[in-house]
Length: 149
Image (cartoon, rainbow, N blue to C red):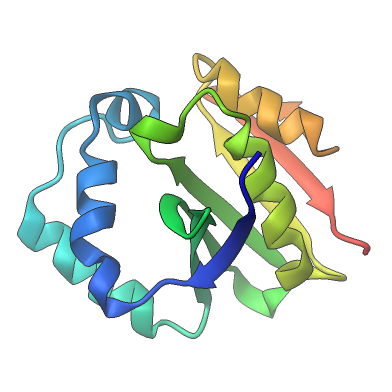
């Protein structure tokens, strides 16, 4: 596999993330399935870029943008919710597992937590492959991992 690394998201990533967010498969696997308007996305992106409780990264595969992962730190800053997306042209290459692995150093000594729709088998497998413990909830699967590097 090509060289993989994370870089911090920047203001210039807004349109790229908008395109990925409105991809048909992304919407199907999201908790909010309807398309997102650009104005709404741009306001959300601006807010996230300036929140102290948010860390957003772009996955680079051979220096090309291949995905995005976000850590939203909750009260007390000991637990972060994970949200990630793999670019359509990079799906099926195992990058979901890799993006989860690459973000772990940013959460050393903390807990990472992801929620996945039950139908999103690929994402559930990515969390399981990385050693996250699964708990079944009424409407989703929840994955948690205490990060100790």
